Length: 462
Image 1 (cartoon, one colour):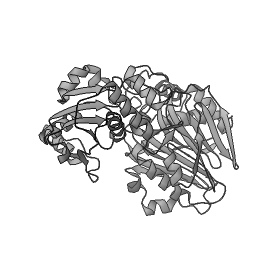
Image 2 (cartoon, helix red, strand yellow):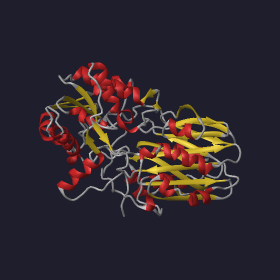
Image 3 (cartoon, helix red, strand yellow):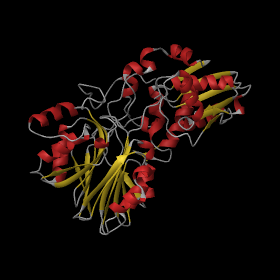
């Protein structure tokens, strides 16, 4: 892995009358596929039956026509869905979501994006009290907290659970009649609300709403519980808002056509590129993005510098995900499977723009490929600061010892990747480009929502 890995995507809907819940959720999941490619799942109810289908794989691999057919209840009105990248708990089928439990509230289903930083002490407490866990995911901690709060209404129980939990998260909960959406008080993980002719929808990003036939209404506020019950949208501010959403949503994760917390992802990336040129100009002949992650910033760098933008790297759309190979030669060939240089770089001084450098191995191979293809110079520009700290809020950035910027200076990284020059965007440049306070913990180690006692991804393994 030489990129921060995707988080998870969640979405849900509540309909006033019977609709093809499974079909709508399937469309929405396809719009969130970029947020997780390990597993996908869906829960659907008509108020009586409560059906769940989930498995490891991409959305279209899990949800075949046969599987979707099993979920197509004629009177279905509620559903939620999830596409997963594992940030706490192994990539096992038992960790695929939605997770479900039978509680005093009835059957509950939960879909979760993010991490609870105090999941382990809460889990240990629940185990001492006699709880039984079926998964190794921190999501189940909240589910069993809710089971312990059966004397409260479901919205009140969710609000109480939020007061016990720490971390960065967005969550959808569903029983047979009610759909709830929750967002941590820092708003680290995104969640948006939409309105459709048939009812209401929630999703990690607005493009999923659009595919489901819903119009964006607003973002769920940090610390808010929003729920739909009997056709009414209701809200409870469970915790005081202290908004610091994750900067990486705008740097890399969110789709370019997303608008989160009022800031457009693509425009923010273009502004990052413009800020990057102001902070680190280079004498060069053209600007080349690393596709697809560096395109927005490269557009901004080219605009600010007046240099032409050229696609000097071709991305193979059919390469898909490949396993890391055991030898250096095969790892190099894997990079060439996904990316290859074009003739645009021959005899040119190139500004190569990407959104981040994690381990530096892929960046090193790309620089080498460009020079082998005839680039005279390669000036590497990165539209985020150096990643020096792991993320505990739902992004898999790798352990700190594996982060090249935690061990090396910028000059040492430049020498390692073989670039003629290297510069990263400053924290202030990121803030200016996004236009609001954001979480920069992976750059500066200042974690707004706390850190876990045990920072390992598999800390909840049995």
